[in-house]
Image 1: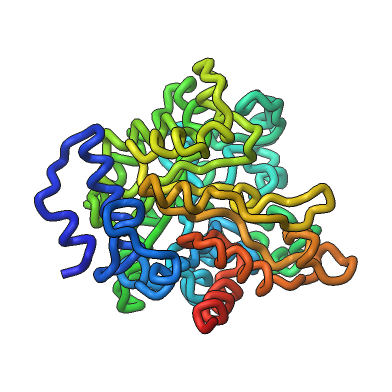
Image 2: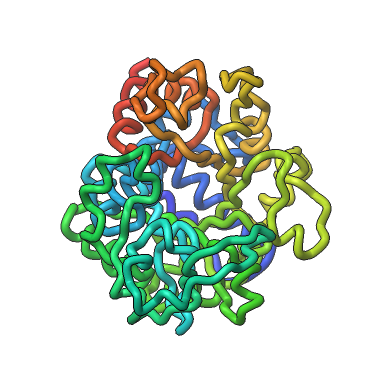
Length: 395
């Protein structure tokens, strides 16, 4: 029996604090492996023990999470990107960032504005759909998924989001359509059978407050899809994340999956806080008090890497913060984001040369972040992450 199954037994479908604590124990046990202690609970394992105890369903720790698939090599949120992430060794695939269509389907796009990730601009029949909207307080012009039916979106094809940095990826422009979350759930089962091991996914609710105002309930749509496929349980291979804590709180009452609160820069406020008048910033959420509150309804956090190791004015890494220790003390796991191979995304002291698109000392950067005791990391380059983990675990 796996650690997840043993923790799942005897756990009902109840809601609230008890349910959240049970899921937190489940995810902690999964990260530590069958023989490990649960992070932040009695009998806490030391960081060095965690690194050798296995990961989600026995996968390694630190866990390598394919950020939007293998987006360092293929246009993000396509089955080409998702499949390659598995081929390159990702333990979990972030499939995907979820946004709704006008007719209530969830599709996988980085943002609801799709001008930069699809060929919609080349479709004259959709020229009149181009609009300017206020998205989480920011005026944004383009084409938005909520203005299209699923059938209309299926006529579009994905393109590379940052072609100036990843010109190689433009080779694949137009090759893949936009996946639906229903298709992702079926793909997950197909790949699990094909590869002979459980495939995990890590979907995210995008801008749920924005969509709720339009009558599109992201949490209900997501929970309905998971329930339909029998993947809304504590031992289901689906971890759910959101930048809006209230979205995770709502999901805590709808599903039993492990839940993760994403955290941006310390001086920012989650948009649901802005809307509700909550004055707290991310800096307040990463205090011991804030982390304890998060642990009452979630099992992990996904902080930006700068919250784990801040940078100085020149962009060099400085001394690690106390976030890893504080989060573990609260019983939370940490899956920070995002590691990428190119200089433009790396800390200044790990860049090589002056070409922003060239690869830097990414293995050195991985090693530095792994040494903080993080439980996993999102990366656009799963193969690099896997090799970096092997180096790190060898010592």
